[in-house]
Amino acid sequence: MHPMSLTTIAEAVGGRLADVIDPGVQVTEPAVFDSREAGPGSLFVALAGEHADGHAFAESAHNKGAVVALVNRPVGVPAIVVDDVLHAFGTLAHSLLTGPLAATRVVAITGSAGKTSTKDFVSQVLPGSVVATPQSFNNEIGLPLTVTMADTTTDHLVLEMGARHIGDIRDLTLVAPPDISIVTNVGTAHIGEFGGRDNIAEAKGEIVEALAPGGLAVLNADDDYVQPMRERAGGSVVTFGLGEDADVRATDLSTDAHGRTSFTLVTPEGSAPVQLQFVGGVQVHNSLAAAAVGRGAGLTPEEIAARLSRAVPRSRWRMETVTRADGVTVVNDAYNANPTSVRHALEALASMSGGAEQRSVAVLGRMNELGDDARAAHEEIGRHAAAQGLDMIVLVGGDEAGWMRDGVRDAGGRATWVPDQEAALGLLHPALRPGDVVLVKASRAVQLQRLVEELLKPAPPAGRLTGGSR
Image 1 (cartoon, helix red, strand yellow):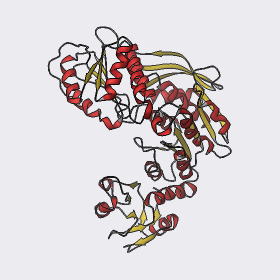
Image 2: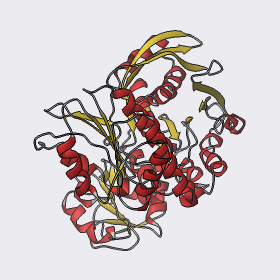
Image 3: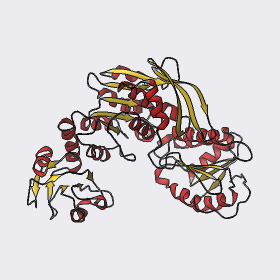
Image 4: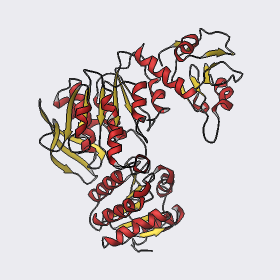
Protein backbone atom coordinates (compact mmCIF):
# COMPACT_ATOMS: atom_id res chain seq x y z
CA MET A 1 0.00 0.00 0.00
CA HIS A 2 1.13 3.51 -0.69
CA PRO A 3 2.29 4.85 2.71
CA MET A 4 -0.38 6.94 4.42
CA SER A 5 -0.39 8.45 7.89
CA LEU A 6 -3.27 7.75 10.24
CA THR A 7 -4.29 11.39 10.01
CA THR A 8 -4.40 11.22 6.22
CA ILE A 9 -6.47 8.03 6.24
CA ALA A 10 -8.89 9.45 8.79
CA GLU A 11 -9.37 12.57 6.67
CA ALA A 12 -9.88 10.48 3.53
CA VAL A 13 -12.61 8.31 5.08
CA GLY A 14 -14.24 10.94 7.28
CA GLY A 15 -13.29 9.18 10.50
CA ARG A 16 -11.79 10.13 13.85
CA LEU A 17 -8.76 8.74 15.62
CA ALA A 18 -9.16 6.78 18.86
CA ASP A 19 -6.47 5.43 21.20
CA VAL A 20 -3.78 6.77 18.87
CA ILE A 21 -0.51 8.01 20.37
CA ASP A 22 1.21 9.13 17.17
CA PRO A 23 -1.14 10.15 14.33
CA GLY A 24 1.84 10.48 12.02
CA VAL A 25 2.50 6.73 12.03
CA GLN A 26 2.04 5.32 8.54
CA VAL A 27 0.23 2.32 7.15
CA THR A 28 2.64 0.80 4.64
CA GLU A 29 1.25 -2.69 3.96
CA PRO A 30 -2.02 -3.96 2.40
CA ALA A 31 -5.21 -4.10 4.41
CA VAL A 32 -6.44 -7.34 5.99
CA PHE A 33 -9.83 -8.37 7.37
CA ASP A 34 -8.52 -11.58 8.97
CA SER A 35 -6.54 -10.75 12.10
CA ARG A 36 -4.40 -13.84 11.55
CA GLU A 37 -3.00 -12.21 8.41
CA ALA A 38 -2.11 -8.91 10.11
CA GLY A 39 1.52 -7.89 10.21
CA PRO A 40 3.77 -4.88 10.79
CA GLY A 41 2.51 -1.88 8.86
CA SER A 42 -0.91 -3.27 7.95
CA LEU A 43 -4.43 -1.88 8.29
CA PHE A 44 -7.00 -4.14 9.97
CA VAL A 45 -10.55 -3.76 8.69
CA ALA A 46 -12.99 -4.79 11.42
CA LEU A 47 -16.01 -6.19 9.60
CA ALA A 48 -19.05 -7.51 11.38
CA GLY A 49 -19.85 -10.86 9.74
CA GLU A 50 -22.64 -13.37 10.06
CA HIS A 51 -20.73 -15.52 12.53
CA ALA A 52 -18.14 -13.17 14.02
CA ASP A 53 -17.49 -9.47 14.58
CA GLY A 54 -14.07 -8.28 13.51
CA HIS A 55 -14.02 -5.74 16.32
CA ALA A 56 -13.41 -8.61 18.73
CA PHE A 57 -10.13 -9.36 16.92
CA ALA A 58 -8.74 -5.82 16.67
CA GLU A 59 -6.44 -6.35 19.65
CA SER A 60 -5.10 -9.56 18.14
CA ALA A 61 -4.37 -7.76 14.87
CA HIS A 62 -2.65 -4.97 16.81
CA ASN A 63 -0.48 -7.49 18.63
CA LYS A 64 0.59 -8.90 15.26
CA GLY A 65 1.75 -5.47 14.12
CA ALA A 66 -1.28 -3.84 12.52
CA VAL A 67 -0.79 -0.08 12.74
CA VAL A 68 -4.47 0.76 13.06
CA ALA A 69 -7.94 -0.76 12.88
CA LEU A 70 -10.81 0.63 10.84
CA VAL A 71 -13.82 0.33 13.17
CA ASN A 72 -17.26 1.70 14.00
CA ARG A 73 -16.51 2.01 17.74
CA PRO A 74 -13.37 2.34 19.90
CA VAL A 75 -11.72 -1.03 20.59
CA GLY A 76 -8.90 -0.16 23.01
CA VAL A 77 -6.14 -0.16 20.39
CA PRO A 78 -5.20 2.46 17.76
CA ALA A 79 -8.24 2.89 15.53
CA ILE A 80 -10.01 5.08 13.01
CA VAL A 81 -13.68 5.23 13.95
CA VAL A 82 -16.25 5.62 11.16
CA ASP A 83 -20.01 5.17 10.86
CA ASP A 84 -19.80 2.41 8.23
CA VAL A 85 -16.60 0.37 8.04
CA LEU A 86 -17.24 -1.18 4.63
CA HIS A 87 -18.21 2.12 3.02
CA ALA A 88 -15.15 3.79 4.53
CA PHE A 89 -12.92 1.00 3.21
CA GLY A 90 -14.25 1.60 -0.31
CA THR A 91 -13.72 5.33 0.13
CA LEU A 92 -10.11 4.71 1.12
CA ALA A 93 -9.53 2.60 -2.00
CA HIS A 94 -11.07 5.29 -4.19
CA SER A 95 -8.90 7.98 -2.61
CA LEU A 96 -5.83 5.88 -3.37
CA LEU A 97 -6.80 5.42 -7.03
CA THR A 98 -7.65 9.07 -7.55
CA GLY A 99 -4.63 10.27 -5.57
CA PRO A 100 -1.23 8.58 -5.35
CA LEU A 101 -2.22 5.72 -7.69
CA ALA A 102 -3.83 7.92 -10.34
CA ALA A 103 -1.28 6.78 -12.95
CA THR A 104 -2.14 3.10 -12.40
CA ARG A 105 -4.42 1.77 -15.16
CA VAL A 106 -7.40 -0.21 -13.90
CA VAL A 107 -8.52 -3.27 -15.86
CA ALA A 108 -11.96 -4.42 -14.68
CA ILE A 109 -13.34 -7.86 -15.56
CA THR A 110 -16.84 -9.24 -15.20
CA GLY A 111 -18.94 -12.05 -16.67
CA SER A 112 -21.02 -15.02 -15.63
CA ALA A 113 -18.05 -17.35 -16.02
CA GLY A 114 -14.34 -17.09 -16.77
CA LYS A 115 -13.54 -13.96 -14.74
CA THR A 116 -10.78 -15.56 -12.71
CA SER A 117 -9.05 -17.34 -15.60
CA THR A 118 -9.28 -14.18 -17.69
CA LYS A 119 -7.74 -12.26 -14.79
CA ASP A 120 -4.90 -14.79 -14.66
CA PHE A 121 -4.28 -14.39 -18.40
CA VAL A 122 -4.48 -10.58 -18.35
CA SER A 123 -2.13 -10.27 -15.39
CA GLN A 124 0.49 -12.34 -17.26
CA VAL A 125 0.06 -10.65 -20.64
CA LEU A 126 0.31 -7.02 -19.55
CA PRO A 127 3.78 -5.50 -19.39
CA GLY A 128 5.24 -3.82 -16.33
CA SER A 129 4.20 -4.23 -12.72
CA VAL A 130 0.76 -5.82 -12.33
CA VAL A 131 -1.37 -6.37 -9.21
CA ALA A 132 -4.41 -8.62 -9.62
CA THR A 133 -7.36 -9.74 -7.52
CA PRO A 134 -6.28 -12.63 -5.26
CA GLN A 135 -8.47 -15.72 -5.47
CA SER A 136 -11.96 -14.40 -6.33
CA PHE A 137 -12.02 -11.34 -4.08
CA ASN A 138 -14.42 -9.57 -6.43
CA ASN A 139 -16.95 -7.90 -4.14
CA GLU A 140 -17.21 -4.77 -1.98
CA ILE A 141 -14.70 -6.29 0.46
CA GLY A 142 -12.21 -7.93 -1.87
CA LEU A 143 -11.98 -5.13 -4.41
CA PRO A 144 -10.75 -2.37 -2.05
CA LEU A 145 -8.49 -4.92 -0.38
CA THR A 146 -6.86 -5.56 -3.77
CA VAL A 147 -6.44 -1.84 -4.33
CA THR A 148 -4.42 -1.60 -1.10
CA MET A 149 -2.02 -4.20 -2.54
CA ALA A 150 -0.90 -1.68 -5.19
CA ASP A 151 1.60 1.15 -4.82
CA THR A 152 3.05 3.86 -7.04
CA THR A 153 5.19 1.31 -8.90
CA THR A 154 2.07 -0.59 -10.05
CA ASP A 155 1.42 -0.06 -13.76
CA HIS A 156 -1.80 -2.08 -13.99
CA LEU A 157 -4.39 -3.11 -11.43
CA VAL A 158 -6.49 -6.06 -12.67
CA LEU A 159 -9.78 -6.34 -10.78
CA GLU A 160 -12.55 -8.91 -10.93
CA MET A 161 -16.00 -7.45 -10.37
CA GLY A 162 -18.80 -9.80 -9.38
CA ALA A 163 -22.51 -9.13 -8.90
CA ARG A 164 -25.67 -10.68 -7.54
CA HIS A 165 -27.92 -7.68 -8.18
CA ILE A 166 -28.28 -4.85 -10.65
CA GLY A 167 -26.20 -1.97 -9.31
CA ASP A 168 -23.51 -4.09 -7.65
CA ILE A 169 -20.96 -3.54 -10.41
CA ARG A 170 -21.84 0.13 -10.67
CA ASP A 171 -20.97 0.48 -6.99
CA LEU A 172 -17.64 -1.29 -7.52
CA THR A 173 -16.74 0.96 -10.45
CA LEU A 174 -17.41 4.00 -8.28
CA VAL A 175 -14.65 2.70 -6.00
CA ALA A 176 -12.33 1.74 -8.87
CA PRO A 177 -13.20 3.55 -12.13
CA PRO A 178 -11.95 1.33 -14.98
CA ASP A 179 -9.71 2.34 -17.84
CA ILE A 180 -10.38 -1.00 -19.55
CA SER A 181 -13.54 -3.07 -19.05
CA ILE A 182 -13.86 -6.73 -20.07
CA VAL A 183 -17.11 -8.70 -20.29
CA THR A 184 -16.40 -12.41 -20.74
CA ASN A 185 -19.99 -13.62 -21.25
CA VAL A 186 -23.54 -13.50 -19.94
CA GLY A 187 -24.70 -16.87 -18.65
CA THR A 188 -26.97 -18.11 -15.92
CA ALA A 189 -24.78 -17.80 -12.82
CA HIS A 190 -26.85 -16.28 -9.97
CA ILE A 191 -29.92 -16.27 -12.23
CA GLY A 192 -32.04 -16.99 -9.18
CA GLU A 193 -30.92 -13.66 -7.74
CA PHE A 194 -31.24 -11.68 -10.97
CA GLY A 195 -34.46 -13.17 -12.32
CA GLY A 196 -33.31 -13.66 -15.93
CA ARG A 197 -30.44 -13.28 -18.39
CA ASP A 198 -31.67 -9.87 -19.54
CA ASN A 199 -31.18 -8.62 -16.00
CA ILE A 200 -27.77 -10.28 -15.82
CA ALA A 201 -26.77 -8.50 -19.04
CA GLU A 202 -28.04 -5.22 -17.61
CA ALA A 203 -25.88 -5.73 -14.52
CA LYS A 204 -22.73 -6.84 -16.36
CA GLY A 205 -23.00 -3.91 -18.76
CA GLU A 206 -22.54 -1.49 -15.89
CA ILE A 207 -18.82 -2.16 -16.16
CA VAL A 208 -18.88 -0.78 -19.71
CA GLU A 209 -20.96 2.26 -18.84
CA ALA A 210 -18.39 3.16 -16.18
CA LEU A 211 -15.66 3.76 -18.77
CA ALA A 212 -14.54 7.33 -19.14
CA PRO A 213 -14.01 8.80 -22.62
CA GLY A 214 -10.82 7.27 -23.93
CA GLY A 215 -11.43 3.99 -22.13
CA LEU A 216 -11.53 0.59 -23.83
CA ALA A 217 -14.37 -1.95 -23.72
CA VAL A 218 -13.32 -5.54 -24.52
CA LEU A 219 -16.41 -7.55 -25.47
CA ASN A 220 -17.15 -11.16 -26.42
CA ALA A 221 -18.22 -11.13 -30.08
CA ASP A 222 -19.69 -14.64 -29.78
CA ASP A 223 -22.17 -13.76 -27.01
CA ASP A 224 -25.47 -12.26 -28.13
CA TYR A 225 -26.03 -10.69 -24.72
CA VAL A 226 -22.60 -9.03 -24.65
CA GLN A 227 -22.50 -7.53 -28.14
CA PRO A 228 -25.23 -4.92 -27.51
CA MET A 229 -23.10 -3.51 -24.69
CA ARG A 230 -21.02 -1.67 -27.28
CA GLU A 231 -23.83 0.90 -27.31
CA ARG A 232 -23.25 1.49 -23.60
CA ALA A 233 -19.50 2.14 -23.94
CA GLY A 234 -18.20 5.63 -23.45
CA GLY A 235 -14.88 4.80 -25.09
CA SER A 236 -13.65 2.58 -27.89
CA VAL A 237 -14.63 -1.08 -28.33
CA VAL A 238 -12.62 -4.13 -29.35
CA THR A 239 -14.21 -7.55 -29.72
CA PHE A 240 -12.83 -11.06 -29.33
CA GLY A 241 -14.11 -14.45 -30.40
CA LEU A 242 -13.99 -17.20 -32.98
CA GLY A 243 -16.05 -15.57 -35.71
CA GLU A 244 -14.56 -13.57 -38.56
CA ASP A 245 -16.25 -10.41 -37.33
CA ALA A 246 -14.19 -10.39 -34.11
CA ASP A 247 -11.30 -7.91 -33.94
CA VAL A 248 -9.14 -10.40 -32.05
CA ARG A 249 -9.85 -14.04 -32.88
CA ALA A 250 -8.56 -17.58 -32.91
CA THR A 251 -8.30 -19.96 -35.87
CA ASP A 252 -6.85 -23.44 -36.43
CA LEU A 253 -7.85 -24.73 -33.00
CA SER A 254 -6.61 -28.10 -31.77
CA THR A 255 -6.55 -29.82 -28.37
CA ASP A 256 -3.82 -32.06 -26.98
CA ALA A 257 -4.25 -35.12 -24.75
CA HIS A 258 -4.07 -32.91 -21.63
CA GLY A 259 -7.03 -30.78 -22.69
CA ARG A 260 -4.89 -27.78 -23.62
CA THR A 261 -5.71 -25.83 -26.78
CA SER A 262 -3.40 -24.44 -29.42
CA PHE A 263 -4.54 -21.91 -32.00
CA THR A 264 -3.48 -19.11 -34.27
CA LEU A 265 -4.01 -15.68 -32.76
CA VAL A 266 -5.32 -13.31 -35.44
CA THR A 267 -5.33 -9.53 -34.95
CA PRO A 268 -5.49 -6.56 -37.35
CA GLU A 269 -1.71 -6.22 -36.89
CA GLY A 270 -0.88 -9.84 -37.77
CA SER A 271 -1.05 -13.39 -36.44
CA ALA A 272 1.03 -15.74 -34.27
CA PRO A 273 0.75 -19.28 -32.86
CA VAL A 274 -0.40 -19.89 -29.26
CA GLN A 275 -0.14 -23.03 -27.10
CA LEU A 276 -2.13 -22.58 -23.90
CA GLN A 277 -1.11 -24.14 -20.60
CA PHE A 278 -4.68 -23.87 -19.24
CA VAL A 279 -7.05 -26.84 -19.49
CA GLY A 280 -10.33 -26.54 -21.39
CA GLY A 281 -11.54 -25.13 -24.68
CA VAL A 282 -13.27 -22.22 -22.91
CA GLN A 283 -9.82 -20.86 -22.13
CA VAL A 284 -9.51 -19.80 -25.76
CA HIS A 285 -12.06 -17.04 -25.23
CA ASN A 286 -10.50 -16.05 -21.90
CA SER A 287 -7.08 -15.80 -23.50
CA LEU A 288 -8.45 -13.79 -26.43
CA ALA A 289 -9.85 -11.23 -24.01
CA ALA A 290 -6.36 -10.91 -22.54
CA ALA A 291 -4.90 -10.65 -26.03
CA ALA A 292 -7.19 -7.71 -26.74
CA VAL A 293 -5.95 -6.00 -23.57
CA GLY A 294 -2.33 -6.70 -24.52
CA ARG A 295 -2.96 -5.25 -27.96
CA GLY A 296 -4.34 -2.13 -26.30
CA ALA A 297 -1.11 -1.92 -24.29
CA GLY A 298 0.89 -1.81 -27.51
CA LEU A 299 2.19 -5.38 -27.64
CA THR A 300 2.78 -7.06 -30.99
CA PRO A 301 0.91 -10.25 -31.95
CA GLU A 302 4.12 -12.21 -31.43
CA GLU A 303 4.64 -10.74 -27.96
CA ILE A 304 1.03 -11.44 -26.99
CA ALA A 305 1.19 -15.01 -28.27
CA ALA A 306 4.40 -15.69 -26.39
CA ARG A 307 2.96 -14.33 -23.14
CA LEU A 308 -0.24 -16.32 -23.53
CA SER A 309 1.76 -19.47 -24.18
CA ARG A 310 3.80 -18.94 -21.01
CA ALA A 311 0.81 -18.07 -18.82
CA VAL A 312 -0.13 -20.62 -16.18
CA PRO A 313 -3.15 -20.92 -13.88
CA ARG A 314 -2.64 -18.92 -10.69
CA SER A 315 -5.97 -19.55 -8.96
CA ARG A 316 -6.72 -22.70 -6.97
CA TRP A 317 -9.50 -25.21 -7.63
CA ARG A 318 -10.16 -24.09 -11.21
CA MET A 319 -9.38 -26.96 -13.54
CA GLU A 320 -6.40 -27.57 -11.25
CA THR A 321 -4.89 -30.78 -12.61
CA VAL A 322 -2.81 -33.20 -10.55
CA THR A 323 -1.68 -36.69 -11.54
CA ARG A 324 -1.26 -39.19 -8.74
CA ALA A 325 1.76 -41.46 -8.51
CA ASP A 326 -0.35 -44.32 -9.85
CA GLY A 327 -1.30 -42.37 -13.00
CA VAL A 328 -4.82 -41.26 -12.06
CA THR A 329 -5.38 -37.61 -13.01
CA VAL A 330 -7.68 -35.53 -10.82
CA VAL A 331 -9.06 -32.25 -12.17
CA ASN A 332 -10.15 -30.03 -9.28
CA ASP A 333 -12.70 -27.50 -10.50
CA ALA A 334 -14.56 -27.32 -7.19
CA TYR A 335 -14.22 -23.59 -6.50
CA ASN A 336 -17.62 -22.80 -7.95
CA ALA A 337 -20.16 -23.95 -10.52
CA ASN A 338 -22.91 -22.64 -12.77
CA PRO A 339 -24.48 -24.22 -15.86
CA THR A 340 -22.04 -22.57 -18.25
CA SER A 341 -18.89 -23.49 -16.34
CA VAL A 342 -20.07 -27.08 -15.73
CA ARG A 343 -20.74 -27.62 -19.43
CA HIS A 344 -17.29 -26.30 -20.28
CA ALA A 345 -15.66 -28.51 -17.64
CA LEU A 346 -17.43 -31.61 -18.92
CA GLU A 347 -16.33 -30.86 -22.47
CA ALA A 348 -12.76 -30.42 -21.25
CA LEU A 349 -12.93 -33.77 -19.44
CA ALA A 350 -14.11 -35.48 -22.62
CA SER A 351 -11.20 -33.96 -24.54
CA MET A 352 -8.69 -35.20 -21.94
CA SER A 353 -9.69 -38.83 -22.07
CA GLY A 354 -10.49 -41.56 -24.51
CA GLY A 355 -10.12 -45.30 -24.87
CA ALA A 356 -9.72 -48.11 -22.39
CA GLU A 357 -6.45 -46.72 -21.01
CA GLN A 358 -7.73 -43.20 -20.31
CA ARG A 359 -11.27 -43.32 -19.00
CA SER A 360 -13.32 -40.29 -18.01
CA VAL A 361 -15.06 -39.87 -14.66
CA ALA A 362 -17.23 -36.87 -13.74
CA VAL A 363 -18.06 -36.19 -10.09
CA LEU A 364 -20.67 -33.45 -9.85
CA GLY A 365 -22.50 -31.69 -7.03
CA ARG A 366 -25.20 -29.06 -6.96
CA MET A 367 -25.12 -25.62 -8.54
CA ASN A 368 -26.38 -22.86 -6.27
CA GLU A 369 -28.42 -19.68 -6.81
CA LEU A 370 -30.46 -20.87 -9.79
CA GLY A 371 -33.85 -20.04 -8.31
CA ASP A 372 -36.86 -21.40 -10.17
CA ASP A 373 -34.56 -22.68 -12.92
CA ALA A 374 -32.69 -25.02 -10.58
CA ARG A 375 -34.37 -28.27 -11.54
CA ALA A 376 -34.30 -27.62 -15.29
CA ALA A 377 -30.68 -26.49 -15.13
CA HIS A 378 -29.53 -29.57 -13.23
CA GLU A 379 -31.45 -31.89 -15.58
CA GLU A 380 -29.83 -30.16 -18.57
CA ILE A 381 -26.38 -30.65 -17.05
CA GLY A 382 -27.21 -34.35 -16.68
CA ARG A 383 -28.14 -34.55 -20.35
CA HIS A 384 -24.99 -32.68 -21.33
CA ALA A 385 -22.86 -35.03 -19.23
CA ALA A 386 -24.44 -38.04 -20.91
CA ALA A 387 -23.78 -36.55 -24.34
CA GLN A 388 -20.03 -36.40 -23.67
CA GLY A 389 -19.72 -40.19 -23.72
CA LEU A 390 -18.10 -40.33 -20.28
CA ASP A 391 -17.19 -43.66 -18.72
CA MET A 392 -18.64 -42.87 -15.30
CA ILE A 393 -20.82 -40.12 -13.84
CA VAL A 394 -21.04 -39.79 -10.06
CA LEU A 395 -23.61 -37.36 -8.65
CA VAL A 396 -23.16 -36.27 -5.05
CA GLY A 397 -25.82 -34.86 -2.73
CA GLY A 398 -29.56 -34.39 -2.43
CA ASP A 399 -32.33 -33.37 -4.81
CA GLU A 400 -30.05 -31.53 -7.23
CA ALA A 401 -27.96 -34.67 -7.77
CA GLY A 402 -31.19 -36.58 -8.38
CA TRP A 403 -32.26 -34.05 -10.98
CA MET A 404 -28.93 -34.46 -12.77
CA ARG A 405 -29.42 -38.25 -12.63
CA ASP A 406 -32.82 -37.78 -14.28
CA GLY A 407 -31.19 -35.75 -17.05
CA VAL A 408 -28.55 -38.41 -17.63
CA ARG A 409 -31.27 -41.04 -17.93
CA ASP A 410 -33.32 -38.87 -20.29
CA ALA A 411 -30.31 -38.78 -22.62
CA GLY A 412 -29.86 -42.55 -22.46
CA GLY A 413 -26.87 -42.50 -20.13
CA ARG A 414 -26.07 -44.03 -16.77
CA ALA A 415 -25.05 -42.35 -13.54
CA THR A 416 -24.49 -43.25 -9.91
CA TRP A 417 -26.19 -41.06 -7.30
CA VAL A 418 -24.56 -41.08 -3.87
CA PRO A 419 -25.68 -39.15 -0.78
CA ASP A 420 -22.37 -37.63 0.32
CA GLN A 421 -18.63 -37.32 -0.24
CA GLU A 422 -17.83 -40.32 1.92
CA ALA A 423 -19.99 -42.51 -0.27
CA ALA A 424 -18.42 -41.01 -3.41
CA LEU A 425 -14.94 -41.77 -2.10
CA GLY A 426 -15.93 -45.32 -1.26
CA LEU A 427 -17.18 -45.76 -4.80
CA LEU A 428 -14.24 -44.12 -6.55
CA HIS A 429 -11.22 -45.45 -4.66
CA PRO A 430 -11.65 -49.09 -5.68
CA ALA A 431 -12.82 -48.18 -9.18
CA LEU A 432 -10.05 -45.89 -10.41
CA ARG A 433 -7.02 -47.19 -12.24
CA PRO A 434 -3.94 -45.68 -13.93
CA GLY A 435 -4.79 -43.40 -16.83
CA ASP A 436 -8.23 -42.41 -15.60
CA VAL A 437 -9.15 -38.72 -15.58
CA VAL A 438 -11.50 -37.57 -12.80
CA LEU A 439 -13.28 -34.19 -12.88
CA VAL A 440 -14.67 -32.88 -9.57
CA LYS A 441 -17.01 -29.87 -9.81
CA ALA A 442 -19.76 -28.22 -7.76
CA SER A 443 -20.64 -24.89 -6.21
CA ARG A 444 -18.29 -23.68 -3.49
CA ALA A 445 -20.74 -24.38 -0.66
CA VAL A 446 -20.64 -28.10 -1.46
CA GLN A 447 -16.93 -28.17 -0.52
CA LEU A 448 -16.05 -30.93 -2.99
CA GLN A 449 -12.40 -29.90 -2.76
CA ARG A 450 -12.38 -32.08 0.35
CA LEU A 451 -13.17 -35.06 -1.84
CA VAL A 452 -10.29 -34.05 -4.09
CA GLU A 453 -7.94 -34.01 -1.11
CA GLU A 454 -8.96 -37.57 -0.25
CA LEU A 455 -8.70 -38.74 -3.85
CA LEU A 456 -5.13 -37.44 -4.05
CA LYS A 457 -4.05 -39.56 -1.10
CA PRO A 458 -2.62 -43.04 -1.77
CA ALA A 459 -5.47 -45.22 -2.94
CA PRO A 460 -6.33 -48.80 -1.97
CA PRO A 461 -5.68 -51.48 -4.62
CA ALA A 462 -7.48 -50.61 -7.85
CA GLY A 463 -10.63 -52.39 -8.85
CA ARG A 464 -13.05 -52.24 -11.69
CA LEU A 465 -14.80 -49.13 -12.95
CA THR A 466 -18.54 -49.64 -12.94
CA GLY A 467 -21.42 -47.40 -13.84
CA GLY A 468 -24.81 -47.80 -12.25
CA SER A 469 -27.86 -45.83 -11.33
CA ARG A 470 -29.96 -45.13 -8.33
